[in-house]
Image 1 (cartoon, rainbow, N blue to C red):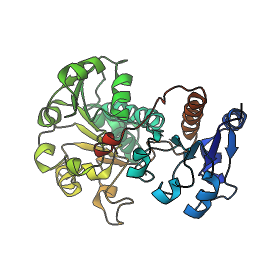
Image 2 (image 1 turned 120 degrees about the vertical axis):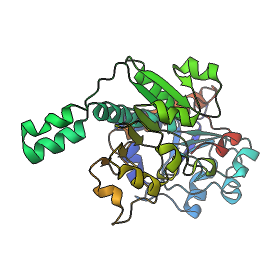
Image 3 (image 1 turned 135 degrees about the vertical axis):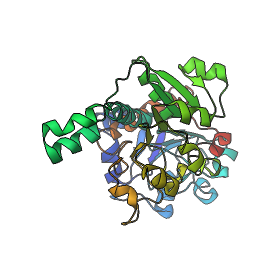
Image 4 (image 1 turned 180 degrees about the horizontal axis):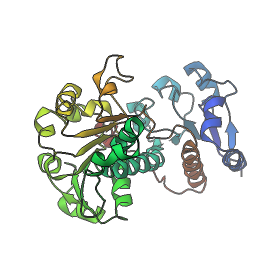
Length: 335
């Protein structure tokens, strides 16, 4: 039996970032791999050549959009394995109209984001950032005041906004601690939230009762500025807002105003726009910790995406259903 033909619509630089040598070797052993030999992702015209006769293809960041014209050259295409997060940049209605399954690496990326989030939760509870600044500027004893605001995880309340891949993974990691987990997600029922290990509440309740609020909602019109002046004022004194999702979830002007009171802290991995303007005050506030969109896979964590892609291809070859298929109706509420 001839091998399945799989086109790689990813440049050599992208392949090296996502696929470990062992993973790539296993992929080449499993299927007839048609690789793009240039460093950058293929153009639409180059992709047509690669796709001709393909049963499946692998896409990633920068891959061309799967338009009807592109799909016409591959009538046997049954699977698109997106070795990246959101599939929105590459899919069109034609993909689903032709019965092509699309998978996403979002679940693999979510693990790294959740680990980063957990680290920020713990360090914010321990008041690490304020302690570090005080000691750096005034010596060991200068941290005495900041020590008064140190909290342990036990008995605290963590609010999770959004139960997508990342939110669920954060909840899973938090099961190792004696914390109360509140969840806001309008797509879930109370029983579904309980099955995850959380208590479903409305957003205002979550904002008011949480010691740490962590955002994991998708960036869609309905979630733009869901964190605003009104619900920021509900946060406890000393609470921390963490955003490892998308900057558009927060009304940044309202956040700046609330942070200016000194009541709360913020840990921001993302901004809106991104990168932030040079004079964005969030970059200079003492109660803000900023990182440059590193919560997801930016280095070694990328290999997990490649491993997941290999598993999807192996299941396709074996006639098994995809593990991480994204249905068309999900696009309305996924990132």
